[in-house]
Length: 403
Image (cartoon, rainbow, N blue to C red; front, side, top):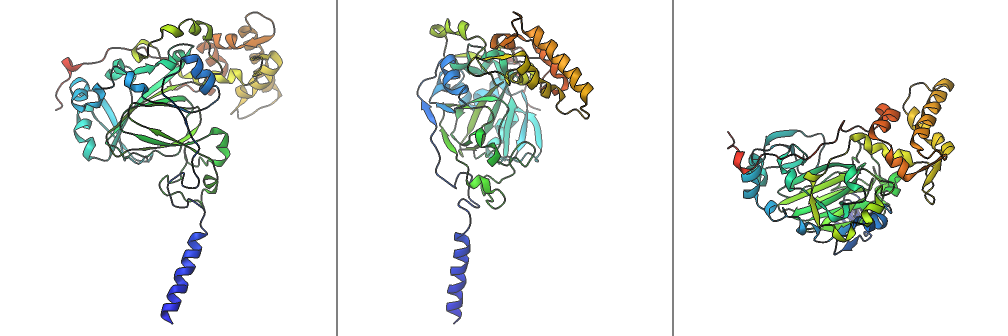
């Protein structure tokens, strides 16, 4: 009798469990098979990259692209990094499974290199000036003309002993990740499915990427996804606002992210055409200037553009842009709307340099950062007041032993 009851209980439990949503309490992406990611064995030129991938918001993996960076082999040696950059002051994050509520630790790069293989820490650090490694950070060929380098935002190093897991999130940047060591798998979700990806934390999803609660997050059990597999030497393009979760191998893992502002079109397409045959495989970041933070908001100038003619009229521009000017205002009355409309009309007239009542792509890109800031004010995404030029940092000759 007891045996029969036990069997019935087991069958009941199994029937309940089998009724759970597919992928419940399993890793993100377990709910269905992934869609493919395009893989290229060579790096496209900037125009082909923009037209075929950036403008289409289409991720793509560049197999072996980072092998062509002059710093590639050197950066795979901890001894080299400690000798040349040991005195660099860095900030390490606690926990290799990303938890944005955990703390950080200040230390020298040399100390990090001594302890990272046996400690649950993760280096997430920008490599912009005055950080000394700037001189060994390289931009791939696909960004070297057309205007990409005028809208660079930041570059970040990701370095650990492996086993890191990011939260599910998206970024307000275009993004290329280049992997110097280790491997990574990325769960990618198209931004067009934004209504199916709950961003219930401060800018990211609170779902546990290792054990997704499909009762709490039911739409994550229905959303299509892509799988990207990066190996050492690969670079991967992550389009603007695509959702992603990154899972790193359990071996030494070092990568660089290159972030730039979203571009409606290439502002220097014709000049780039003339350079295509002479572009190098990579160039130092040191040669370029990062853009003022307000440039992240430049794309609002194109919200009213017709995608076929790539122009907008004054009436369309004013109608759309007034909303940006008034957004977030505590009180919006007729007087405020009239004032905003007058300001936007004057802005359009100034930007419309040939005075034909039509704003072109070239005219929108010719608007200065100061003019953009003037019309948007505090509503511009000002992550930096000014861009930064590259600068030479300390080398092995002036690295001091850690006290």
